[in-house]
Image 1 (cartoon, rainbow over the protein chains, first blue to last red):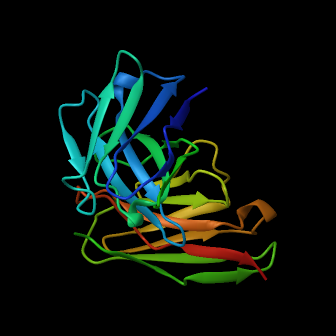
Image 2: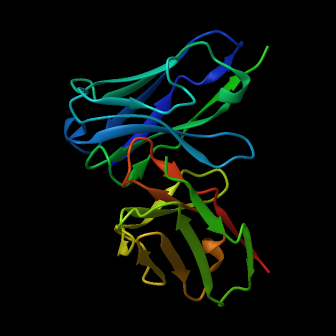
Image 3: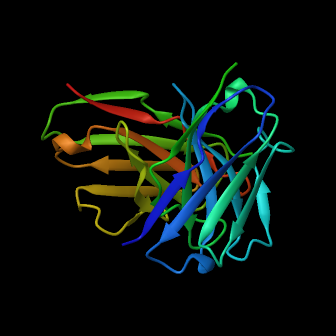
Length: 119
Length: 108
């Protein structure tokens, strides 16, 4: 079955870096656009970053621009989110999700990985 | 950036009753709107895309309507498993994707 599994979350100090991974199975990963969406405590969903099926087109949200970057390895069915200069407000549950086209609805989501930024 | 507003913020409904959730966009997004359901401790689940199309496996009691700036998610005869937070999301003017703040549907 179609599955997305995130990993790499944890507790990190402000200003430090962390890389999240998302491993896909049950579908042809290299034909789907992929995204990271986060859910901060007490807040709603916020799209953080997305990229095209081939990784050639990458986009990040304004709140993480210059600090987060998204990438993928289609040979390993993996999506990554490299986060640097982390702030307390980056504390959230991070989900990976797929879409058929880069600007489309998100039809499958992982269970999320929790990132806590705290000293 | 397109801003989505959802109303009401919280909706109290008795099981078996219907519910109507609203999502309004700050400018026209055509029919490029999706609805998601999120239960506590679970990942969001796609319910509706293209404003009106039900996603695979979604029960017929969920329906979406609207285009342009005003959209509605209707849930007929709420079941116990339908009590959750519902988000709308636009993908017409991207990036960024924008989500509404959510409507919590709770048991009355």
